[in-house]
Length: 485
Figure 1: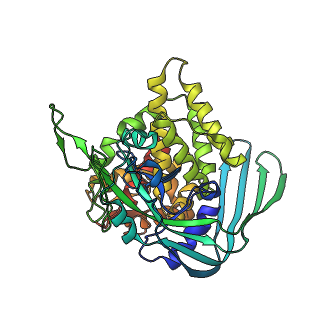
Figure 2 (figure 1 turned 30 degrees about the horizontal axis):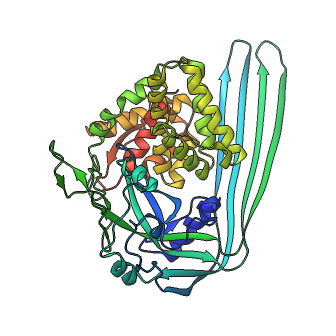
Figure 3 (figure 1 turned 180 degrees about the vertical axis):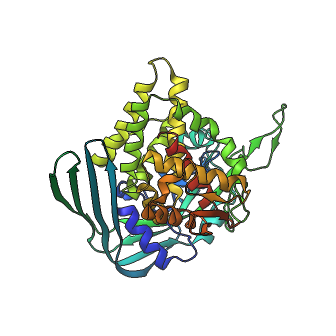
């Protein structure tokens, strides 16, 4: 909840995107001090659309410097304090879904109507926010002849992780008074059924309604860090380091020859994605096809349960992000402390882990790791979608609809421009007007146009070649969820 509120605030006040929002209140409890060491972890290979993750290890830059001469003075640069912004705001979304249908049988006709209205509104009032920043010039001058202690645990452990980079926190945004974030959820639903028997002149009507209200408030104390910025370090093998002032190109010097000759160079990013270039969708999906195949051969009951869990997760953007982070840690062989999660998030994560364990034997660690990677891929793609796109996809999570979406994704990837018809096998489910409109909206959010040609339900699927990753993450999410249908 805090992450969503902070991100919304930063969209309004930080146009250049230099500030990093905290992901939880636990991050700011004494860990995000000025000159703290921050470990920045780049996305896993193949998940280039993800945002980097940031974690404080509880050490400052001074703590990891190699001991020098006795007369060395401690690093204590001047700190500038200023007002940042006085902020309060409300944001949210409202969704309304209606569906109806007829079922004809030998004995009776059944007419079913369902309507659901869902709203999610979040109010945040951070009040007057303060900014603290160190004078970077003093840090640079102090660090000129200094070296890092390469035997220090935080340096050694960070260096061992190929996707990890060290940074120094140089600016932070803090609350100056107690404030509150409130999340309000309203769900209203109505359902009705009308059944008429064919053999007798009789009928039965039944209807019902349901409503769910949820108000959750989070009180944030004063002096809580809500956002920060850092400067990355480029660290040489001998401990010398530079502050990367004008670009994010930090990392560790690496050894490139068999003779252990040191060569300058940032660790290979392993296929970084150029956000300004259109991608080859067909090629990218082909690389990931083994993940979809692995999920598609799971027992039907397990696939259905996993699909339902992911569908439920999509109702809350923050839960998706939390699940993605936990799964990434598990895929990396790290232990994740589920005790830090909210109860609903912890239950969802544990349910998914239990399902994975049920699908493999006790000694099949390799298969378990592959399944976790496949599920992480889907959740990562969900996390990379826009809020609106994720919401629309969540309303399309029945197996028949997902199979239809997968067919459309395949046509986009093939790029043939072939004319399709809603009467084609696999697409007939989209003849229901509201489902078609949702599908049209989902693809439009990924720069793909569904254009109707005539009244005979013929249409074309045309991709607009735009830079970015929206089309890919939507396609991965659709293929992954469809493999569970």
